[in-house]
Image 1: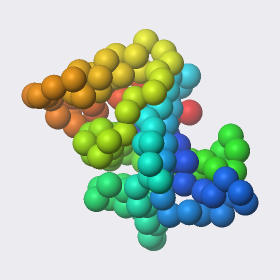
Image 2: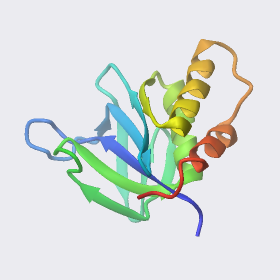
Image 3: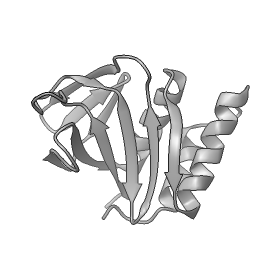
Image 4: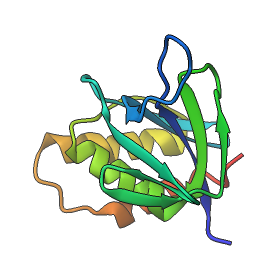
Length: 139
């Protein structure tokens, strides 16, 4: 089985926890490591369909999911690491910023993302995928 990552999406209305169809924050968490990305507007569109989700024009296979993780604004989606890497790269291009990182490997990923925002970046989602793989398997 391909490596998996936990993709936490702030995609529910804060008033009542109902699905909003928009994402204003993303957190990638794996074995005590996490990276948080935020978008300082009303967020970006999220659609769900059978077996997957579509975010930032990227389709992710959803292997498992849970609603209201942490609080009712957040849902958890377990997806392949390659899909998460593509979403992170697209999120950074769409104006998301890396707001926090916890853990050695997450800090390394945060530094990669900060370097990408600082100017021309020769990296790719493959570089992000390698950094994510160092987190370990999704808990």
